[in-house]
Amino acid sequence: MNFKILKKSKISRARLGFLETEHGVVETPCLVPVATQAVIKTLTSEEAVQTKSQILIANTFHLRLRPGEKIVEKSGKLHKFMNWKKPLMTDSGGFQVFSLGFGKDFGVTKFLGKGMENKKTIAESSQPKSVKITRDGVFFRSPLNGDELFIGPKESMKIQEKLGADIIFAFDECTPPLADYNYVKKSLEKTHDWAKKSLKFKSSKQAIFGIVQGSEFKDLRRESAKFINSLDFNGFGIGGDLWRDKGGTNRVLDWVIPELNEKKPRHMLGVGYLENIKDIIKSGIDLFDCTVPTHYARRGIAFTSRGRLDLNKVNFLKNREPLDINCVCYVCQNYKKNYICHLLKAGEITGMKLLTFHNLWYFNTFIEDIRARIKKGEI
Image (cartoon, rainbow, N blue to C red):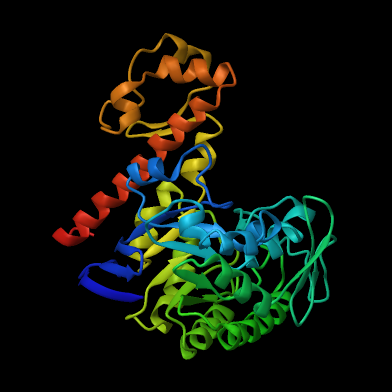
């Protein structure tokens, strides 16, 4: 992997660059759409390319469950298995430590909502109900059949090597937003130990990113950034629980970014709401993965230059306009709101497919415009 910075903004930390991998070049800053099970839900790989998506991220934990990394490896690894000719990432399984653990227990996402700052209920000795977190790794229960599954840094590296993505991530714990300081501090010790072990157990030529954790605590975030920066990673992931309210995530980035080697790429894990994209790019992020454009599409929501549209609403059955009159994507050139609304009402998967295509195109075009504005010195 080769990363080169082409231009640095003079008015923010934003920067233009390119990330060169065995399977092609990614222009940064860039959205990384989520292909959890080696697919952008409802789209073929060819259609995902047509949305202007440059790189995808698949999920180590879920691909371990099915079809299993050995089947993927014997199929020629992920690129051939899913017929994706562009670059790929795989995350380490660290997010599932949270999502299948405390996230499931408390019904929370990784974002700490405003007004919840004083509701810390997860203390240092706490354990989630369905996941057992140990010093060596994590015992999971398969959501498919209840079988026990252990993943630590060694297991994560071996699975990711068999999957064969261009970029892999060190194993870590994505901390829950309701965790107190002592829990996060103890978790950080494990994450840092797992980072060292991930490097030790990695035997492939794949690029590997280390992950900065530390929750909302400035000293822990800075400690983590310094530690991960001191190791021989090819790039950095910034993860963990974050604020959803405007400015919160940027405060974390203000603590972290100055501690990281600026010559290496920075990836924000699980962040990419349309209203936050410009801010995280201005804070110095090069890549970020997010389910928003695809997740919302499958629930009937289109992102447009006039805001979000809920195509489930019956009034759209009488609307013969495209989703966005300013959009030139395949969907907006060929289909109308009334048809897409009809498909959703009829339970036809093609409605979700059309919205997924449009939303990814819209997000990628939005970021293209940001890259152009960085180049002009406007951001």
